[in-house]
Length: 574
Image (cartoon, rainbow, N blue to C red):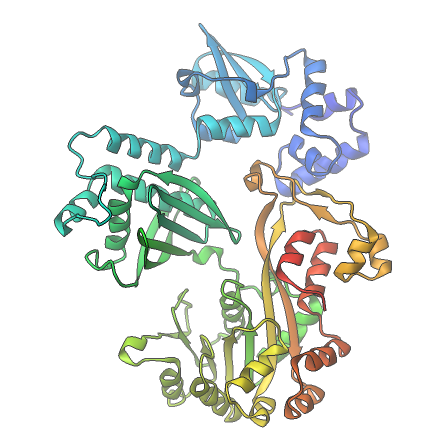
């Protein structure tokens, strides 16, 4: 082996032989560096590893936060190599390069960097967090470097047509805007923002103009993070560039607009992938805010077993979607993953023997073998009209993007009662309150009871980073107050986020759904016909074994998938 880290730590007696075996197994399973596996298992912390190596190897241990690295030293090593090997060049004297390393026992890394730089390597030891912070400080992401260069190009260009707007009203002509968007630095800046967002796995990009600044934020795992705060002079050309790419009218700034962009991105692996972006503009007090929703089909999980269903809930859901007729409703707020659940369901049913038709606003992903219709209300093509047309197209399965009004619900019910399987969404807080919502839309209870076969409520929570999550000791009373039984509270191990390079120091990586699946059986139908309140319906469903949103969250806490904070944020106690 090139690295003898495990042997040195055993010699220092900071870990045991059994702990090393477990860490090596985790290293193989997840393709992690050994030091990362040891830290993620909680056997040792980063500083203990660094100091143990320092004692054994007689290399200095340094705190990188206390160092200032000269630009000419940083340039000796490409950012991608520094990140790959977790190293940071910090000093050069003649033919000697001082290199901060997490694992200085890895001779292959030292030899590779000696070959690349032509310099003799003098290792010093630093923590993984210290090295990662230094890399982010001096290199940033590759896209960030390009953005920085683009900004510098614009700042230095004496003939640049991007002008600082000093008046409260903008005075750009259309010709000036078009010209400014065609400048190489602006093109580079916008392209770099898009590429960086896609590589980071962002779901949305927000371009936000304010009185004295222009902010760009990414939504990562459901949470917005500020990526850059640009001078106000960038507002007009950047927004105009995005609008031109989206085929929007750059002269229209008073009304909202919607468009699409198709982007082809080359990944670090050398492969390329195409990503669709849905672009929306809204006029705000200080200019147009633009949001680009990234629709990355490779990030779309259409495997029902991977979405977050508990086994019991998944079995109920699968039984319902294979029924020949009836309505299945998925409910939850905007951004709770309803579209993914619906797409997964109809993809499960998609085969040559079924005619599946969808009416969506907008169509987020194109699915092979499914007939998808984009709603266009401006020309009268709404959900109700689409549904009527579908019924003349011999459908087996229909998906209606949203039950917005009585007319749409009425046609969907008639379709269900005449032998069609209908999927749709409603905005309600939980499964039981969906019944009340339909009754408030003037739908007769007997029609609801006869046509509805299943309601699914869902929420999205962030998943704990499995590389850095740490145990979280909570009082028994707090666990019981959340909904755990006294017996469960005694036994469970709760985890909380810590933060590491793998999760951008957030402690979370990815999201998973909490599900509440309520089948409409005879007893629930009787309550619907009696116009029972939603709490009575929910109580009866729980008595019959329904796993609620809160219970689904508690199960995922118990399994170490998410944190207490995430579940408390998205659910209420039953």
